[in-house]
Structures are given as C-alpha cells and as structure tokens.
Amino acid sequence: MPELPEVETVVRDLRPRLLGRRIASVQTSGLKLRRDWSDAWTAALTGRHVREVRRRGKWILTVLDTDLHLVFHLGMSGQLTVATAQEPAQPHTHLTFALDRGADQLRFRDIRRFGSATLYTSAAEVQRAFEEANLGPEPFDLDPAYWRQRLAATERCLKAVLLDQTIVAGVGNIYADESLFTARLHPGRAANTLTAAEARRLREAIPAVLNRAIAKRGSSIRNYVGGSGRRGEYQEELLAYGRTGRPCSRCGRAIERTRLAGRSTHFCPHCQKESRRSEPEV
DNA sequence: ATAGGCGCCTGCTGGC
DNA sequence: TGCCAGCAGGCGCCTA
Image 1: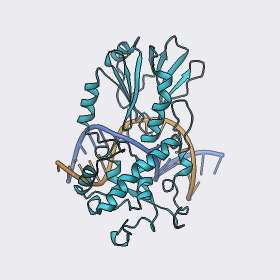
Image 2: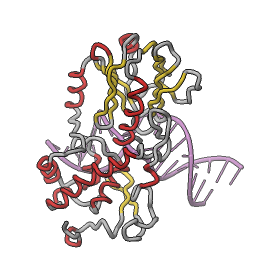
Image 3: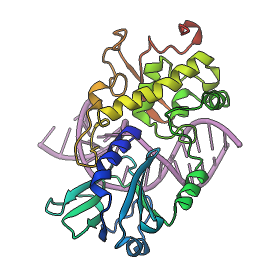
Image 4: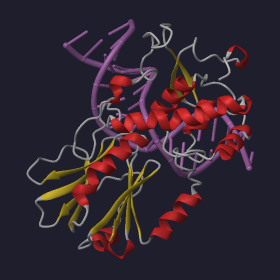
C-alpha cells in the first residue's frame, strides 16, 4: 500500500511521538509477518530508548540505544501508529510496543501481513541488507548521468523501471502512474528509447509528484493512515491512478487502464503517446 | 544476467 | 440475497 509519500508521512508523525521514549515491553499476535518475530528481539529491545526515526525508500528505521535498528516495511496494508493504551487495538495488530510506563503504545497493524519488522544490531548491518537488495537511490536529486544510464541499459517498459526499487527507491504503483502522466510519457514505452529531454522530464516529474503528495500526507485509497492514525488527502489530487474512464485533466479524453509489469496501470492515451515521434520535445 | 510470473494474505466490490 | 472471481498501495523467489 504505502509508497514513499505515505512512509515519509508516517515517519514525520512518529518522530515527535517516539523520540526519547523507552520500550517497556513487546507483545506479538503470534501470526507470521513476512518475517517471523524473534523472542530475542523482544529481549534486546526492552528498556531501550528511541534515538532516531528515519526513512529509506519505503523502509522505516527506528534507531535505539546501542545502535539497535528496528526496521519496518508496511507492505500493502501495514499501519504504524502511536496510540494510548486505552484505545482498543484494532484487529490485525501484530506488534505492540508499550512506551515508557505503558500509557502509550507503538502499534504495527497489517491486515494482509505482507509487511515486516526486523531488528538489526547496527547501522552497518542495515546498510549491508540494503546493499544486498541493491536498493537504489532516493528519488530526490537523482544524478542525471546515473538516470540516463539506467534507462539506456534496459528495454523494459517505463512502468516496470519506476517500480524497480533497485533503480530508484520509493516509487510504487500510484506514483509511477502519476509521474508518467506528469512527464507525458506512455507507461509501456521501452526505457532505452527515451530521448535525453524525455529522460529529464521523467527525472524531474518523480520528485515533483512525490513532494506534492508528501505535502498532502500521502494517498489514502483504502486503509492507509499516518503515524497519528490520520488519513492522507492526495487521493483527491490524483490525475491518472484510479481514474479509469474519467476525463484527463489536460485534454479531457478518458483515462485508460491496462496491465503492465503485472500491475494495474492508468494513463491518458492522448497525452501519453506510445510513439516518440508524436511527442513534442521540450 | 535479466525479465516475467507466482505466491504470500485478508477484505471488498461487482457481476451473475 | 448470496456466491465467487477478481482486484488491491509490495516484494522475494523461482524459472526460462
């Protein structure tokens, strides 16, 4: 579910609610997430204080005393929130971290359980895990030469390239479609056929879209909420994703839906032409 | 090496 | 009304 703007919103919400707080205890539902929770992690975390909350791609990193790194991924339906212990835990809450004396809790809820929580014992260990997964650079200030080179190196379609976390980290299905709409590029276009101008347009569209979405606290299509439990508002401003049959905001033609890279893909057949010749060069 | 498909889960919607 | 296929914001493993 959550892509970079949603994860960034969670991190910003959690930071003031978690910094300096002590983990008093950990409770688990016993159900398996993408990774099993280890009792050793419960023992290691108990009594530690939260020192930092950060984001890398779609990953949430909470840094604790002695450089422990508790790393979350929200998968498709994950929610990470701070709530008071009085508020009843919703179904599918799989991890509950009591904070300080237990009045507040950090809760990891995940209906589909595609998410994960993993404890690493140092920043270097996290770094190694990201390197092993070949996690790509953040989408802000992408190096132009790097970007052109990665596009030129593959004939996969643009949609697949944007979803590939080793090329750029943080873009998912919604923001891939929105970025391609903004860049006026067809999602099925082979990456290695882009002109320099088109590659640049896409490189600039990605952070523009993501920053606008962050400003609106992300998109709540179905169950996404931020770290305070509040929904996002960017779903109101989506121009392509989920707008099948509705008029394109630029030309009025109906937005179309197709399937690319195994994912539902939305685009304007008029503004996002497959062939490059009909594209105005900017 | 690269690219595509499937499985992992639960819940909701739309068509019959 | 009820049932069931299809779909959902992700990713990692397997195969060709």
